[in-house]
Image 1 (cartoon, one colour):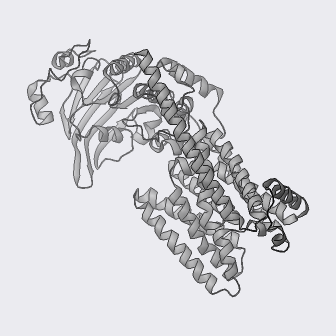
Image 2: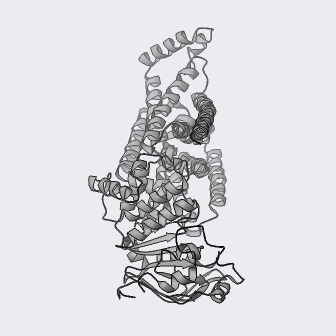
Image 3: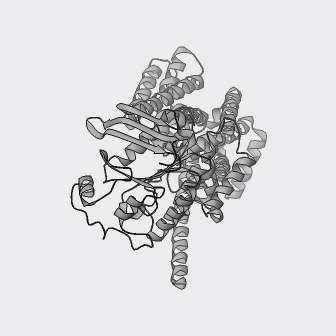
Length: 262
Length: 303
């Protein structure tokens, strides 16, 4: 890595839900300015790893440092976009009010939101190209629009690290490309970790891929060949046909080996 | 209270009946107090009802409401104000249920069911041991808006101020915790604290409404005005305002309708609320279907 400032540092991480091991011996370092794609099969532990990085779960063993601190102390400097919106669709709340919630954690005070909070909200909505949605009720948005709003909510607190869990799981391919174009733009000033099950698609955008199936099967700019992928998924996966019809290079191997800042 | 009312049990137009009711309100202090009690309770419909609907904690609120009988029974047995007993029991029940959920993340509904029944059992035992108080049992269960003493009106006003102050100061935090607990936690909002505080406010609201409709019917007054408001408003603030106004209209109208035929006011208020809810739900359903059809037509034209 060109940059030696470490944003995420994970050593010897182990986590289990009760008796079911989810993560074992995970070592991962993410430097400032990286755009890391975290891929792997379902139930491979991707979301769990994110929750550990965010301090929502506690590891059974190992050490996690985010921005040089334990996760709980760092989480206000981290922006998070969840996989499934957990809120009820009929919640009577506007897009602006949802995005404003990303302004918590910037100091304790009573009463309503300030003009500065609303200005920041308008700015990030502009940035994610959703300014026209500001007064819309959250339940009336399409999947792609909702994803942009959740991204705005994560950005409005001015994070140094952005974490996204399958940001494009519920939206169509054209939208998927738009969201990732936006992330590539944001990567100029932010470190980004994005979880995806779609290795071929994200490899056109990310600077590095880490493959997770209980443990890190591969990472860095290591070559991903058929053997690695079958190690990862436990079966033969048709690599090329998996790719989307998309203007980005569908060949995962070449894109990963190339590495954006390699 | 029944003196004179039997004379009015004759067929007259609704307008004449309403005129009689208004004349009676002007001349009768107890009716003025009853109206005021209804208005004080309706603030609870508006401020806390929407959170009960949005957080889907109606069952939890029902559990708090019923467990309150334990506190009321103990209070009359030991010679305290039953409302004070109700308040203590409600807050205790709210904190217990909240603690179960926050500690075990599950098993909440079992705890609620247990508190619901245990609270009532304790209350019935205390009341059965208190001579002369069995008549009070009916007004605890179903309310008696015509018998709210002036002292209790002051108590209700204090509870209203408490609700208004807390929701006013921490509105943003309550909305954040109701909307997305996980995200609120990530932004450093003390989620457990505000969740427990919200349950305590629900407990206070339950006590506020017990005077008007009794602890069995509280759940309807807590949820129905807010549910109707939610069908026709687009923001939480508007939902709160509409639910408050609807609560005030329902308690006043229920009181007026029950006056001439000398019916208990609590059940009339609840039936009225139920009727409005049904009509509103049907109307909202029809509107949603129309909007969907129009959107489909629109999409068809654009294609």
